[in-house]
Length: 371
Image (cartoon, rainbow, N blue to C red; front, top):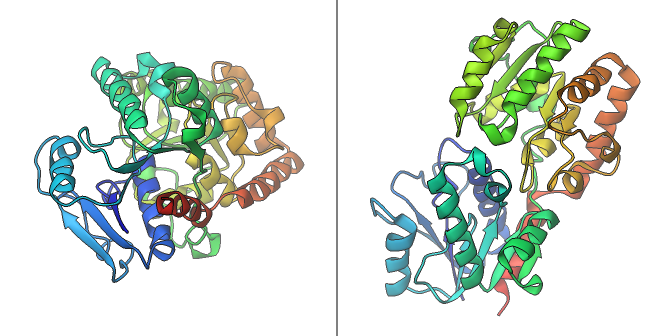
């Protein structure tokens, strides 16, 4: 049996959520599929697994497909036409148009269907077309949450029996506080300051403007000494977010870091007082687990997949992302009430025991090996 895996996103140096998912799944599939013939398909701009993260098993091969445009629909499709595999695994949405062999695709969420104003018209059209077609052509669809599964059934008529829910994991080895050494880089402007933290793409669907508004309420109503750190690369609508930050009465306390490397991300998390993630819609919400794993209390929204990801204890405390004063009040309760803060942190530690990349990879490997 030969398994082909689209690894084009897994070894990119600057990772966002889907790239991190692809990398972690491949890293942990290594032990589950070490006796199988596996072909990893990479783009030329990708680093090889040996150079970035882990060494591959002897039975695995790496193929770099040098195709300048339409890499999936032309480059990967042609490779599979001339060198077919028994099973094709696509960790990120898009299946080659012409491929008909057993395919397993992962769908990370349909946020664009619920927040069309946070995406360009082209992105909405392309994602709707490609994900609907990918679900139709694939033998199995992996949804990263029960909420995403229900979205696929309701909006795209994907048969219930075709979808497996397999949760994402979190990095259990790296975020050990004792292993996170060094100070926060001075460019983040928070070295000697208390701060609240958001990590994710700086875009409208992440409710970044709402986070700034909540921060302003915290400053005015409670006179907190904290800064607000918005860490992440720029996404759709970032101009409006930057404009809002620059116009704020507290602009000197608002820090936009740009994209942060993994080591810096964990340093920021380690030193943050509260992690703010009251986003409008999430297919899963990996940053929640990352924050909980390192002992940072979280403020999260009451929508989409978040209630199933965040844990039973937190569900009564989920916030409406449009209620900025409620977000501010809950954040201040965490800051000001030590016992409540400790309860939130303890609940986070308990919650993350349900998730691991190893378990995620084990379940995916089982699906890939099915005849």
